[in-house]
Length: 347
Ligand SMILES: NC(=O)c1ccc[n+]([C@@H]2O[C@H](COP(=O)([O-])OP(=O)(O)OC[C@H]3O[C@@H](n4cnc5c(N)ncnc54)[C@H](OP(=O)(O)O)[C@@H]3O)[C@@H](O)[C@H]2O)c1
Image (cartoon, rainbow, N blue to C red; front, top):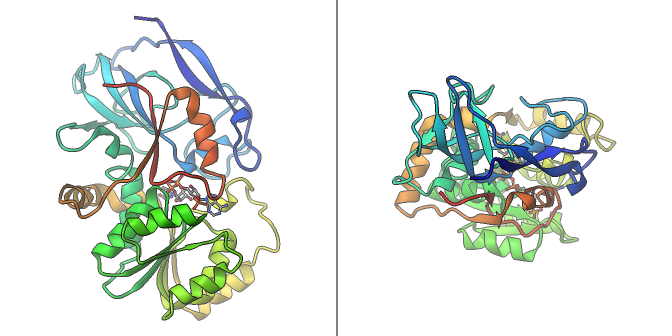
């Protein structure tokens, strides 16, 4: 076996949307696990917009902040190949945030400062990679948007931005299970067609010149729940259509991830807060995995197992393609559908 591995490190802090030049693929020795540690081999890598928070020169929010030369932070599915820990055996499959590298040596109990221990997976229960999507953080987030925070009920109207993404594709299907009318917003005719094929009642292309009018026509009675994944102009078009006492899970705001605390001006905040007050809106920011918890995974597993929801994925092969594919996620109207994964190795 080779003693060297590949890893992706931060080459430079991202300014605005990330670009491939912010990342560098390099060779490094395969680490040796110390006392109490395990050596894991990466099988799958999850590309999540939240990684962008770790790439700012000055940390604003987010648990992880990287410096040039650091391995890029990110969720993975791995297999234990050496173990000095009694609870983790060689051959075990685990999920954690072990980063953009082919191998990692770490204490499996303190693997992540926020989420704690590596989560053991049973490949008999579900395909391993679902633990990064529908049965993982993005599934928990979709569940939190629709169940925990959105409290979506039958016959309500739900609008979901970034509807073709990992969170949106699952959130929309949960909305249909709850008996709601579900309208997605996505970039481009092809992505809207893919969103409708998942069972959404409608999907509106935010790149269309008459987007605001199309959205208004798609929700004639107004909006009860708006799952905001995007912010910016998309959310400004949604605002006037919110009903009195609408709920708005503020899940993400990818349109602004590159602009730090500055943001393009004017920021519309005075009008926005007036609307919060006068429409009695409930807005709540949240970490989906903490709201959804284990109960969300259990319920999603039942829905997946019974075929009531499906699990769209976009898969690319090889660590060398991780950075370019991650950067594409920040290009509005990209070709990604569902959870974006990088296949690193076969089990
Ligand atoms: N609160 C939490 O716990 C939590 C957890 C997971 C994710 N999130 C957030 O939820 C959002 C969706 O995450 P995800 O995992 O579903 O992401 P994803 O699968 O990577 O999808 C992101 C999609 O956002 C759209 N997009 C990108 N830039 C845009 C812009 N400027 N304007 C409009 N749309 C844009 C693109 O789709 P189009 O082709 O349609 O433009 C892109 O494919 C992100 O903001 C993410 O940070 C929050």
